[in-house]
Length: 110
Image (cartoon, rainbow, N blue to C red; front, side, top):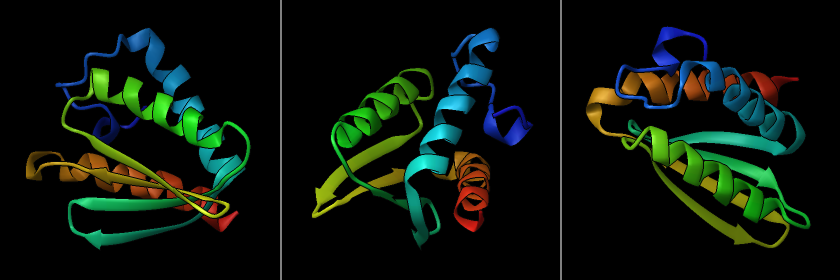
């Protein structure tokens, strides 16, 4: 989230906390992300391996992200051994979603 597309002016997370939040997303992606897709222009789907506490971890992180970046809509669903995180934004924040997809995509390619 250090790139400008990641941190729009509407974000209310204090600047000093932004690197910590980025690290949380990066850790989640590195540990759990298995696939991502773009079912719609303004929607990203992240598929994560499940396990004890994973769905709760994802919900809690998404909730905190929504608190500072209210333009995000997060939907968490579970099925089998997977956690699905759908992320949607409005048209004004398409670049933020694109930056998130690019960052997550880096984790999938590792």
